[in-house]
Image (cartoon, rainbow, N blue to C red; front, side, top):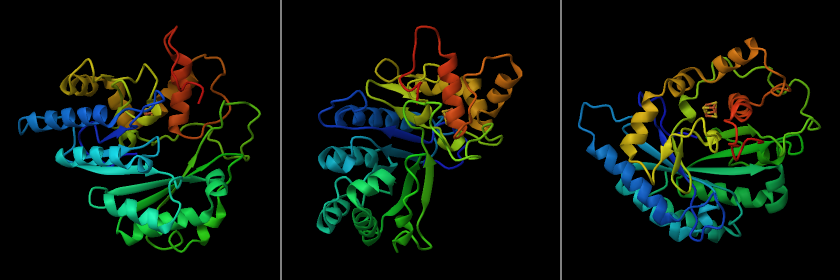
Length: 312
Ligand code: SF4
């Protein structure tokens, strides 16, 4: 996700996953996250006018993972930190924490002045688990508090589109935004049957990466250009615990492979791969440009290094 729009600069958004008591490798404390935000903000303020910073005029911060609204104190710290660095904010949430209208109102009221976009993740399984009423509650509360929201719906062969969503007035109206995201079931298996004709034979020719690229920081300080690229050493930009923001941004801007992906997407890699005499591990169709690229990256990862997400 990117809040950046079509900026001439390389980076458009920051993505962070927070947790007050990190218990997985995908969580970081709000203190660690804030430190990164302050450093990015300081870097941007320090770039002389007229010099290209590699950052857009307005940076968006995307907070996801570990259910941000279930950790409101940490989220508050992080959104304050974003505000003092003039960053737009997006929070990615499920309905996991929404047990009543009062809870939804209390939480959104607390954050409405610092939150610019709410993205609600759902799926067939989520609707079955928490009920369509919980989703309705959250979206109506977002509307009451004048929050911009979008709904991201994950679909897969065993998770069909939850059609009852369309019965909600807050969804079935002119102002709602829905994004359908096909996801792979883990692990990728030949036995997973997608509807015929659903998978792509090739990644989209004009699927640029620009809108999906940002500055994605994971716990420990590693930085990637996009969330789909997390864990792949070929895409890693650097580490904020060992390098300055300026060093990482400068190196990223100098990388022609990223510039080409940003402008063209990975279709050119597909053409290279197709014209070479490679074995067949990439056969079987693709869900998206990112799906193709991730599989290619997993296939070509340096010996001895296996990306954490390589099988996804
Ligand atoms: S295609 Fe590759 S570089 Fe582009 S957004 Fe997806 S994973 Fe990142």
